[in-house]
Length: 128
Image (cartoon, rainbow, N blue to C red; front, side, top):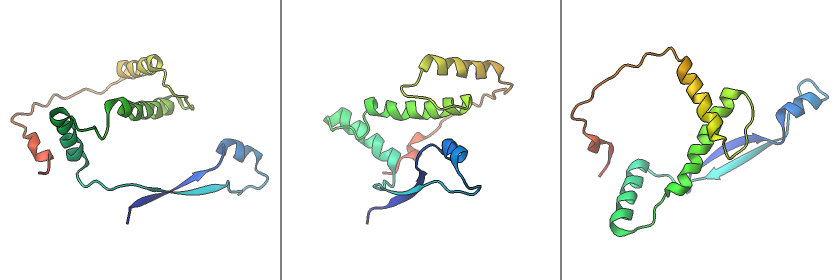
């Protein structure tokens, strides 16, 4: 049996629905969406092994970098949108996003602590 996650999503613009609703407790149309996925017990180890196999044996990558950049851009757009308090369109305006981040950094009052780590054994993060 393939595992899946159930999501609920509204149909249309919720702000417009709220402005045009005739009843105080009207409910917007909701769709239930079931998204199947394959479960990977050791996802990071699987990706790392695949990366090594791609280098050594020319195996195809599970997650090529050219595709993964879209996930990074989406995550950055979500953050930028929340900082601006407005919807954004993709592709992300990377120069505007960088300016926003630099403004946040310049105004930050957080003092960073430097922690030195010695003899860290990263092999413990992989299951073999």
